[in-house]
Length: 473
Image (cartoon, rainbow, N blue to C red; front, side):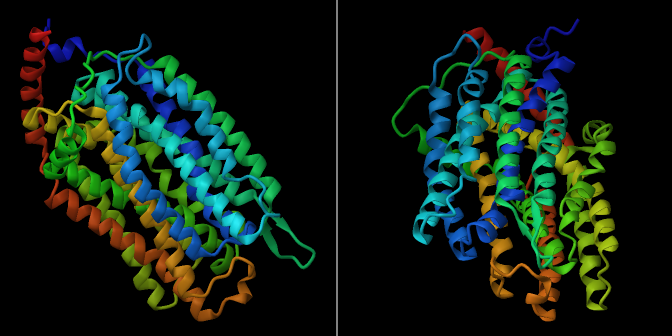
């Protein structure tokens, strides 16, 4: 019988996997609103300029650079609660996070222009802060559910499955929130958006509590010491950790590509294809392969290496978008071809989508073994901040092309945009994901050093370290 420390702090059940998946399902319900609906709601319903929206996201990320590490340190140094070091915070912040999500869609159409801008800045930053408060402990939870790297790989897959289902309601809302006017124009309708946001936020609370109820913390960890300058020391260590920085950068770029597609497609399908009702299909088609790949992603990752299968898959996705751009040069841009490419590229992105979280936990384990860094929450806070930078990059990449083609939220008809502007709109929709996916490939292939062999060595080193720490307690 295996009596290793890792075997004694592992052995997860289906309930653990499903419960952990419920957490990201809940997070992506409300986070999906910001990516699939919010940008167009700001520009078309509240008539906020695209420049103001870009500035808002930049300010929010500057604040996150301060807020996220602080909250990570608070979680790392907090006492143990009867319901767990990390589960406790999910219970505390589930309802406030949902309420903050609804506030972003409050009816401020009667406010002055300046007051509307002030409101979206306030509500967006408030949501980001509360989302951090629940997302950091949730992300750190995987470290204490099990210490086995193969079980963590399985958790990563289930988390990604949860996020897939969590993103769908916002995409559906983005497709059905239009009302037809007397002149046959289709415009985003406030009432549909607000009611949809309320329903989605309420569902997030339900799934957060299911995560809290069904997950179990098996790995006993001690609160980090509250030492002066410890936060700066941890961040300095993270910045010098090649695996951690590589997976953080890769995740940032990958999320930027995903979020760009979800947000930009609301404009592309409304104006270029003139089919706003099909807005959700590109993202759905990209996620469809996940339903198949999820059954063997963990096995392939364990057999050939997680870095290896993820980098190869993302390169495949880049090639399909490059093909779309080349075909566009010859005027071949039918909607069915675009959707087919989304489906094909989804086969490649599915591996990284499903395994990205275990790449991050492998990097955190590397930091424990190499640097003695046991500050999981602060590490995850930094990683979460890098992913948030990805959403900011996505927002900028959505709005800069709109600025270049002279988009105005008050002009919602396809004929209001020139043929050249529409052509540019399509080109941006395929060029940007291609470039981002290529950058992800290069980062994983040449910067992330945790190959299959190195991860196996890391597991042996971790076992020795955990045994020693157990004896000291």
